[in-house]
Length: 89
Image (cartoon, rainbow, N blue to C red; front, side):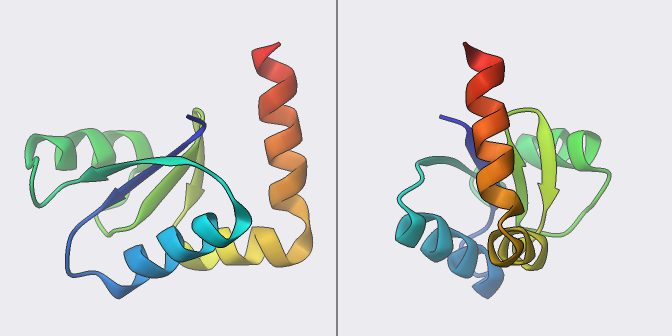
């Protein structure tokens, strides 16, 4: 699964990120830091940020919802997905 979303249950931007990926037909692994508190440290180490959502495509840190949406609008998300697929082959 190429996308990972670090989230919590009460973050509206987390829901918006999930909704966008769902609409685009992309699968993702959601890591709820409110249910798995040790994952907060992992998220902070990987992203350098403390807020949610933090979204990754493979090992590439996308950022939060705003960055994900901007990548989609610009067409760059499709390019990153194509590159991720090429890297896996």
